[in-house]
Image 1 (tube, rainbow, N blue to C red):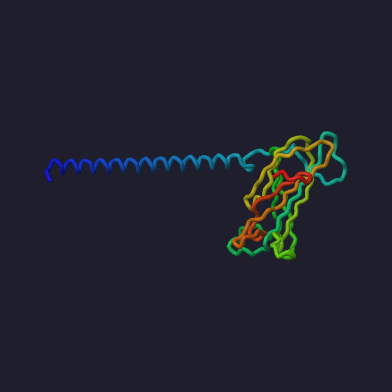
Image 2: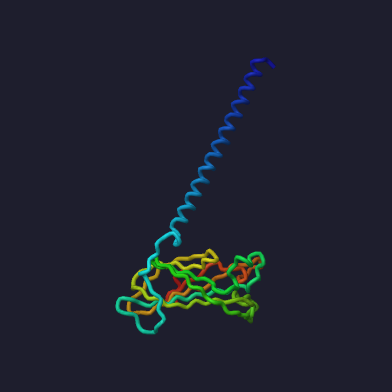
Length: 218
C-alpha cells in the first residue's frame, strides 16, 4: 500500500471519528437541556401548589344546622369513602402509610378555597366473594373511612378538586349548582387491580367515580 493511500485512509478514519464524537456531544447537550427543562417544569408545578398560595376563605362555609340556606346560597353535601387494609398490612409502608390509622385525610378545594377533613376509621370485616363467586372490591377485613360534610356556597358553576393528600391522589370536576335546590356530590372509590385479575381495596385506590345528585359526571 502506498504512503498516499495510507494517509488518505487515516484521514477518512479520523474524519469519521470526529463526526461520531460531534454526534455524541450533541446528543448529550440535547439530553441535558431536556433534563433542565423538565426540572423547570417540576419547579413551576411546586410554585402553584396550595401550600404556596394564599388560599381564599370566602367561597364556602361548612354548615351543620338543618335550616334552609339563606337567599343567594345553596347547600352541597360532600360524600366520600375509602376502605384500606388494617395498619401493618403492608410491612414496607407501615411507618409512612396512612392506611389503617386514625385521622385519614380528605381534601377539598373549590374556587381557591381549601379544606382538609380528617376522618376516624371503623373496623369492617365483610365477605370477600358474592353468591356468584365474584370478588367484592370492598370485601375483607379492613378499615373504612366515611366522609359526610355539608358546605354552603353560591349557586352556579364551580371547579372542584377532591383528593387524598396522604395518597398523593387528586381528581377534579366542574359542577353546576342550581339555586333553591340542595345538591349532593359523591365520590365513590374505584380500586386498583391485582395480579390475579380482580379489584379490591388491598391494592389501593385507582380513581374515584363522581356523582352529582345521583348522576355520574366522571
